[in-house]
Image (tube, rainbow, N blue to C red; front, side):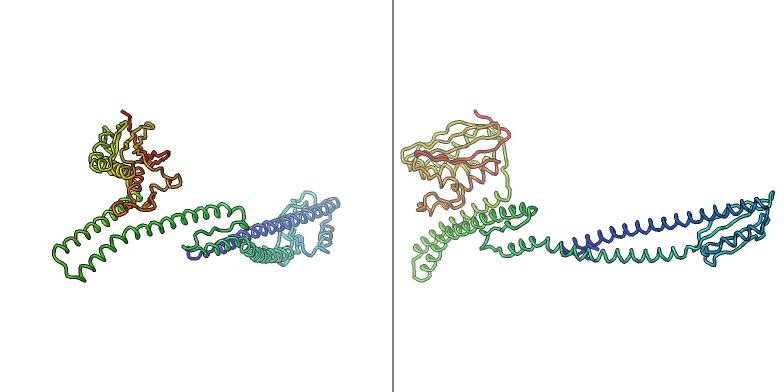
Length: 447
């Protein structure tokens, strides 16, 4: 059934316009034919009524004289010049007084029956059947019907051709847009559709499509940058593994030297494993994974527990850590520990020796709690702050400590914030840098 429906918009519009024109013209033709038919019928009945009056006048004249022959003469005179009329007059007992009928079929005659006064006083009235031959009117109606059918079909064909042309012209902007879209490719996502010559109805579509192109262009550039970062991060350990293996194979080494080579290779493999695990975690977060919340009586206790793991690193950097504030709520403690570990580790790398690292816990609203790790050191450029949570982004362009940190720590912090219905936050001014996350929770309170 659906296979018979035209698939193109132009064909559908043309078909619907043709059907609408046909049924519209058909309705008009039927109305014209019906009006003509009833006009003919009314005229025929008026003619018969007029002749009936004339016959009644003849009967009244004959009644005044009582002469049946005179009425017969009058009836014969009536037929002269009125060949389309037929007349049959029967006496009350059923005998024929006068008869001159039209030799046509019953369907081609219109007739009326009535009584006519007898010329003889006291006799019962005659039974009269007056008919009219309507074959000429029927023939004319048939010609009018044929003309109307031809006009309907011809009009439909003419309107359909004109409609198809108008639809083709009307759809030209869509064809132009289609041509522009066909010219788009992965390497030309920066281009935008030209909607300057498009009608107003298509302007919102062009604007939304251009917005979609902008988002696709940004995502494509981000994906290309991400691929380049992944390749860069994996290239170094893979190159080290390859060169180590080639060196071990090309030269005769002792068991101890081979053990050292395998140990170095294991470190590189562990680094690659760490990168892959972090990327898998971020991928799961991007697919909508959410935090498994449990009641957490003290965020400060969670922070102190994580700080214990970093105690040695903090002492090596000459730093001390304090926790300011506390909050109660429902959080995924294991995810928070991972985020806090990344934040404290990040602060310990960039804080000035001898300074204090502060972990600030604050319930900014009944449903939100923020955790920020503050350290003193170099001020981060304002332009770099929005990109701190991008994957593989480093504010330190020299990539110092790149062999130990692959640039996914803060991206994981941002992912954990989103998994809690929150967001990451960062600020840096006058040597004080605060990096953290805002966590959404339906049950939080500051203590």
